[in-house]
Length: 304
Image (tube, rainbow, N blue to C red):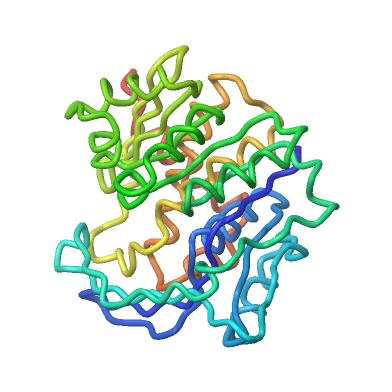
């Protein structure tokens, strides 16, 4: 099955207790693709400005399996840029600046060669853009949307439309509470199921992730990267999504048991992102390294 993602491509500047990185490649689609490509091919649709460095483009080309045919460059525009500082415990961060650039313009076009994609991931962007993108894939077999608190606040009707049209929803624990008004993440996820999707994944950061599906519930802890080994949490959620969807693309399965396993693959993929700044933790990542960490996770979580 062919996997496609649309989302942001950006230039990130990050400060953490362990160091800093200036103007490195980032964005939801970049992390997703780098993560998914460790398991198989992935198609990217995104847009950058004329200030997008050639070395950032080369960095994406360096991940074997990413099809960049849908990457659009607008010479007279500026690339989305974000700067943030993580606090001592790495669970909290403050945004230093956000420059929307091309995100304030029309979304990128989808190449004709991409419209037969069967697995569609809508990385975080305006819900109206996500819905328009989704509607162009008549052959889709599975679609999943990611979102954030901003869209819950300012674009709730459009977000509700997207949620009702997709198979899966990916949110963090505070976002599911904000969306539903329900404090318990399991109950909140079940409330979202009533809106139309078949499953909801609740990201809980260092506490792992929860899959609430019409056929059951699965809880997976985060892979225990030692605190001293966490360098940069940026993009961990997008990398989780890439690992999750990458497993489904690789196996060609979409049943509940496949989603259960995919939750673990997403978890271990995200753990590599944490170990370096930007995309560097995912560089050179391959199936044997993922399998080794996945096997460790299985052993850690086995009770009998």
